[in-house]
View (tube, rainbow, N blue to C red):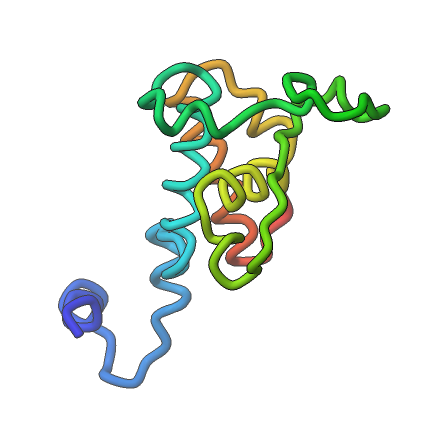
Length: 134
């Protein structure tokens, strides 16, 4: 594995040394979290008119939908479309993106620019990965 060779060259690690502390020092995300990062960024871009229309039309705020008005409809939560197959349908962009975006804290989702959103999102995901208080 290339990354293990890089760790051993830079940090003088032995073959079976733990790399988690080094990865934490480098501020790298866990293996599956870059996927969540890209999905959340694409959802943010859809909400702010920075993504193609064919994607943006599938993401909508709870206040934009024609569903019944709830007490939480004034928040920035997104509509999560219901699917028939949890194995396939829940992985679709509108469902997965809305679910992930709704799970983020308000200080991340209320970022004014894409750069600030990316910075706050990476900090949040990093803190979640390594059990650091956010």
